[in-house]
Amino acid sequence: MLDMSFDLVMVLLAAGFVAGFVDAIAGGGGLITVPALMLAGVPPAQALATNKVQGVFGSATAAISYARRGLVDPRTQWRAALIAGLGGIAGAALVTYLPTDGLRLGLPVILIGFYDGLVGPGAGSFYMIAFVTLAGYGVLKATAHTKLLNLFSNLGGLLSFALIGQPLWLLGIMMGIAQIAGAALGARLAARIGARLIKPLLVLTSGALALRLIWDMV
Image (cartoon, rainbow, N blue to C red):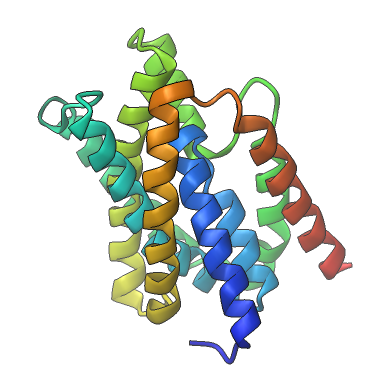
């Protein structure tokens, strides 16, 4: 693990908790943790790899929580989950071949671009929109199915990164434990009120982090 102060590690754990909470409800948790890791001095590709480590914990917690509530049946979604996993493998493999400067300059633009009013935050929002518009699911059921696909895409991405040896495993696992707590709380809240209350907070938080990252590069 990089040489980090205790206070900085605590900030990253807090980011993991908030990301797990937000991601379980509205998606886009990685848009909190990736900028946080990069602001902590983790190189871009390694930040993405470490994000996959901790993201697996949160997405697994949320997926299991929703499955226990009967909102998603993994047995009927295994094909989509497999495709998501293969996509995660391919995407992570591509990242390892991109230059560091390109990633550093491109990530803030991508982070802000995801917040287009019609799209919403993060890859999870694309899944959610597809489930709502194509499958006719309600928002809560769409969120539950999204978490299952997120889990497998995270696992696929982590597999690629693990083979290359880039993740900061200890930091990722520590953040993952925080993600478990946040995701469990978020999934319970989502079952009650849905995602509509958390999305404005996610937009503000991730937008601020992305702008801070741009400011640090100037």
